[in-house]
Length: 196
Image (tube, rainbow, N blue to C red; front, side):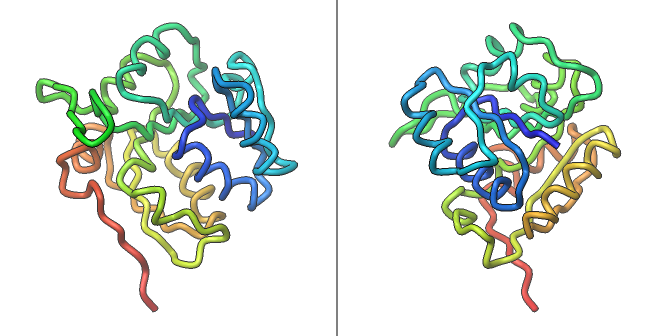
């Protein structure tokens, strides 16, 4: 299975590190080719720098770009109906010391993403700070929430998370679970770890 990343920032690098350690093949793309080269070198033999067209052919895609770029990027790419798109975004309008949330007018951010693509969308990887899961291999069994409308897609991604020693918890649909996960939702920013 090949996992492609749309974006190569902190989320992409952290999750890709777990994947390559578990011997998953990952493809990364970035406008900054020099930075990407060093990222891929650090990740090792299972990581490859690729053009966006190649990344978009992956079985599973991870969307981890700034919210302000989501519409323009997704409106200009074509995804297949059998692909899985992991929406790891948070709807920040601005970053830095003064984070500002984008106005969703009551909508769920991942439902907005779903409406832009044909792929099976799963909300995941957005509720935990990457600092909490930076150690590879994972020392703690961290709970990671997932939401989506396609059970087979959620099962596939849950299996990947289990391979990485995480504990997936299915919250149901994008509409319901995505609202719980997104910024200001009750599950955003929770660091939950399984205790023996």
